Image (cartoon, rainbow, N blue to C red):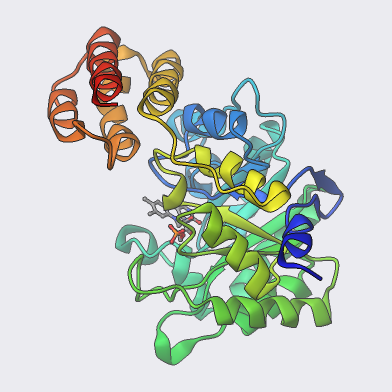
Length: 342
Ligand SMILES: Cc1cc2nc3c(=O)[nH]c(=O)nc-3n(C[C@H](O)[C@H](O)[C@H](O)COP(=O)(O)O)c2cc1C
């Protein structure tokens, strides 16, 4: 079999429990980034499935309006994974009525967040130390509804306590419908190299126990080529783009092209990037208003403009941009400057 024949089958539909999804290139949950404006932009550019950022189950149980806002769907978002975080099953149970009102396609359990504020409550990656809690949470949610449940874990707490097989067993024995692993430990945070060998091991492990349960890989997916390599080398069923999608929603179409046609696209042009960025800004404005959207957009803008000629001056100007018109001015000047560079 040639390399290109092999890569063709790497882009394919996946089933998560009863739900069929057209492709296997997902947008990962990203706190502070995967709001519905950004998710919508990624869907337009080929993301097969998207997740909300992590939503506090406790906040939902208490009916907090701010928490609810995170679950609003984008217009082009028929399917939506809602990720929740909590420290124990009773919280999961109490949040279900409000969560289900938002018709999640999949409910994802966060077992990977390393942020101290979350971990000290016993949620996020703290759950990795108590696999039985993961079992109880999945089991409780499965008992409340027919929505497929996915679990997002890490390798383990630290290098001395790698226990992804154990946490996976806990989830599978409660009938979890999908496992995603961010192949770093909690102690690594987001630095160091993700351990793709562990992903290969996990895929094999799950295939031998629950072959219908897809395994997704996360960690160091910064290009279409990286996604192709992860799919080829680890045999995971799909990938979740995270930091690699920030300011680069084109990574989805690039990967589809690479996997289906073997074509390596050239980097998106200045105009393509600024057009996507402005669209995201306007969508965000519909949700939180022009002023706040302009402020929130700065971190995304830094990623959109990364590596572009004349980007550093544009970034400086955007630090003070408070209106759509100011953003548009900076973007059209940037696009014009890069055109005259040619
Ligand atoms: C700013 C930021 C926010 C994140 N928020 C979440 C989150 O809400 N839920 C979650 O499961 N993972 C979260 N992650 C982890 C990512 O989903 C992903 O697993 C991780 O970044 C590894 O992939 P990468 O190396 O390709 O970026 C976050 C990561 C970053 C950098």
